[in-house]
Length: 190
Image 1 (cartoon, rainbow, N blue to C red):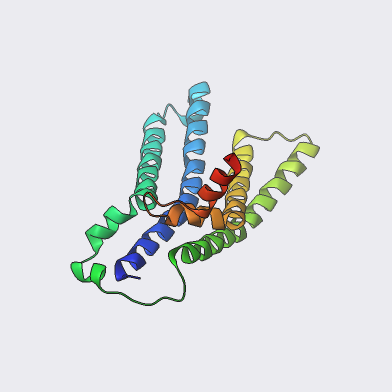
Image 2 (cartoon, rainbow, N blue to C red):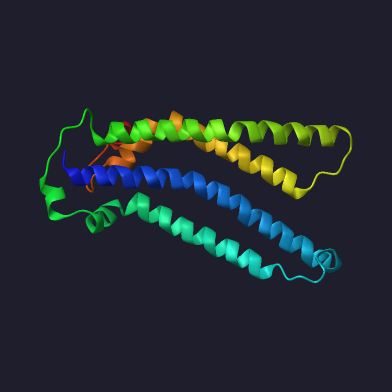
């Protein structure tokens, strides 16, 4: 295994972690959108402050993060070629396992971190929402959004753990190379 492969691993792992960051930023976009809609309904509540620029800045930041994450996940070789020197492509090193296994381990770790960090917020928000609903308090769209985003984090963490083998096989495959998942689907079709 070449030293440049290690750079590719690190870039892909960073891209996988950026997916979790995207979910957090999605919450910011939704909240900005909710505040914008509410401010248009009641202009006196925000003292005629225009929240449209805040929403667009939040949306642009979110779109930039999506593009950056896409680059990290799907243009890994190009990014690694910018980082690596000629020696990195020639120098071989030994590692205890292959690309697929390292990415699988990273997915499981990222999934566990995501679940562990999101679960307390999800349980707390859900408990408060149920409490407010039972006692006929008004719940806002932001309450539902926070529950949705926290739940989405837990689901993404679960998917990262549950499907780590399939995701790592897809992410670590070389161009033109079939993965075990592709071969199984081909065999099922025949």
